[in-house]
Image 1 (tube, rainbow, N blue to C red):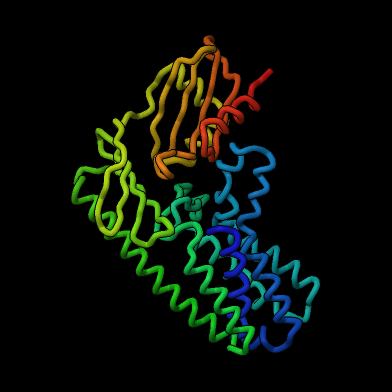
Image 2 (image 1 turned 45 degrees about the horizontal axis):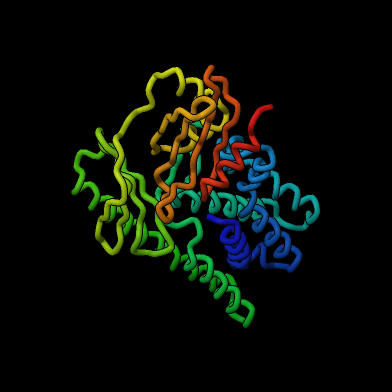
Length: 327
């Protein structure tokens, strides 16, 4: 989920913690737990700082190690331990439990969008991306805002957020059923499909879907139960070719391939050498595919620039590649 949603969920968990008599016993305990769960609800995304290094590192590691099983155990221990050092009157066990719940919930809800996480790492580094909830879901966010207003005007926070999360649990189940219905429909049209990659949108009745068969990749849209084909490409596994093999040594393309499960690739001869471009097919927006990796090399296959990330115009991509040229 996005940062704003994780923040409101952290505050919501703080309100839910008032149901714990040990925490609600005094205001100091309540304040300490509130601070700990808000920070805990953000902690797995502290790896966003990797953007300061470069996109390749960020793409390869974001929602990876910081969302792994060891991290889910380590974050609460560090955060609860730090909070306890400033407020030793708080029960450490209860402080740790609520902080753990905040961290776990962050990782858990991230699994439900199309980006996903490596939540089972290090035992399984496969990306878990269920494609059920959009990365920003207005219902989830604004239902929290309504709960905060009710809390402000006297509604008991524990009961308010307990009811809210019960409703959201039903909402998640409904969205899972809706997703499964879309996938079943796609399988009826393509019973030989090897992979289905689904992405939700703001519109509950609209889904992006990439259908991969042994021969082709179909970029489709499902709206109000109707499957519409947008584009179709031959399915071509990455070949053992000198130009592409050289490009795959580049850190930006390597990062792209470590994350993207469905893409097409294009090799183009350009004025000063070769361009290798990989395009993620999951995130089509207004006829454009914004998540790409591009590697350019001279006629001798020496890489002189590359880029990976989210780009929404060819002009911006050219600027990024120009900035990355090796002198």
